[in-house]
Length: 380
Image 1 (cartoon, rainbow, N blue to C red):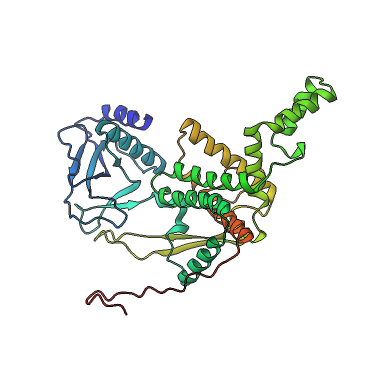
Image 2 (cartoon, rainbow, N blue to C red):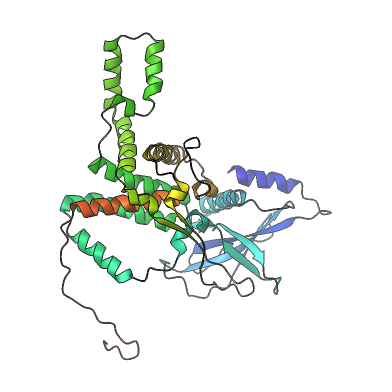
């Protein structure tokens, strides 16, 4: 809540002579009645309810525009805005005991209609590869996966299915709650590693083994004492889980993993009409452009991803959008957690590897559901 308190502190310095700068946020709630707050330090102004919601809606939704007074700023910091929007959503959700969503976007005014506020979604920068058009061979891809999944044993269906639902959950959340989405990707790899991976058997391959060896030496331990401590450490369940995660995630991917593309698609909005423009591809990279073809670096990066996930799960640590977005190429000296897109592609790769290795593809039912003509109800 530090961003909310910082805003309140800034508001104290606003004087009638200088006047505030007004910022805008969207506020979305369930139901047909939008949130309406007036005559206070900020206002929430209801927008017209059309009765038509997006296909993803699970019920009626309405929205308002939050007008937030603030001190004048020269430029907008996306991470600061993200945090403040999240704090506002937390405040409203806790106070109202309802789900209140404040999307991560930037507000701008149309060049020809200055009174019209256009909201530009920004959270999608976490993984712009997901914004691209559908592949032209969509049906064949679905057939391939369905046939392979149907040929899995019941146990493999359970394990691989759990990883698949984690993957899909991450896609649902990546532009709404990217921290939770990231932890789901880590969970997907972890569930596969527990079933199909194994911890390293050599002491030197364990994380921080060199640090322990230095401690043993400093304490002048005997060979027998060192051996006993090493065996105890290597049998620790939590250490084994982390080591298995890193070992599995870095050794299991095929070499072609580094050749997989990551595209940057941009979905713009017409500043005058507010209508979506067709998505355009701004950049194409491959995993190797962001992550060296070095399994040791991949292993160390997975260790950082595991730490990031643990900090979110155990400490509810805040993670900025730019931390999860692919930024600059990685090297041995600057090992960091894998970006969201790279981690997502890695989980997808591991899921497919396990499916292919464990399936006996089956023929799908010989059945065709014909499309109905909308005007007559007849099938064509």
